[in-house]
Image 1 (tube, rainbow, N blue to C red):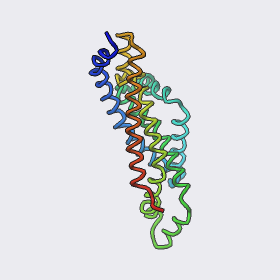
Image 2 (image 1 turned 60 degrees about the horizontal axis):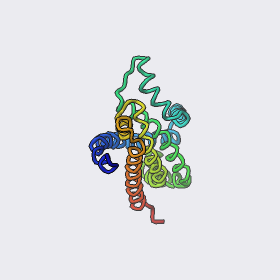
Image 3 (image 1 turned 90 degrees about the horizontal axis):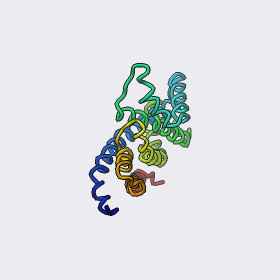
Image 4 (image 1 turned 180 degrees about the vertical axis):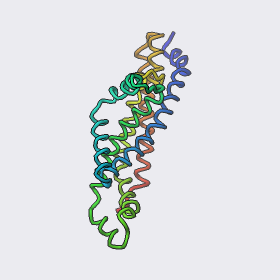
Length: 217
């Protein structure tokens, strides 16, 4: 079988895996962003308990390798009576890991905003909460977007680890095809091109969002 004919025959299976990967990213990317945003705010504006919990979360999930997190969620939790389906385990693992990095980008964005803006909000009668939500957060979102966008690109790439929890995503489907046909180079070359296309598309959309939300000054 020629390589071209093999690629044509493999398209349906790779497409199935691609749909699983896209569904995984579509759930984990926004969930991780929201979680990271909340944790970043908690680290900067929360009380002592919320700051401590958010900091412990960030240190834990940035410190433990993602592959170890996935193994704990899928293979370890059943030992204590909690069983997750492969898709749920992958989404939870990617969300928790991604959220930890997003929280650091949010914290850095908050630190980049001058303290005088908080004081200015209070001087015109706004409460701390009003100042944060109406003055600080819009700027934080814009400033954190490049870093958070970079984390979303990373998420697209390390979503390929989902096969480790038996999820038949793009990489998992590729492994099945490669072992059945012994065309390892062709299989993973095509899969690599698909990931490049996904990353390129995500990068273009994020750059467009950055231009639209850029502060004129």
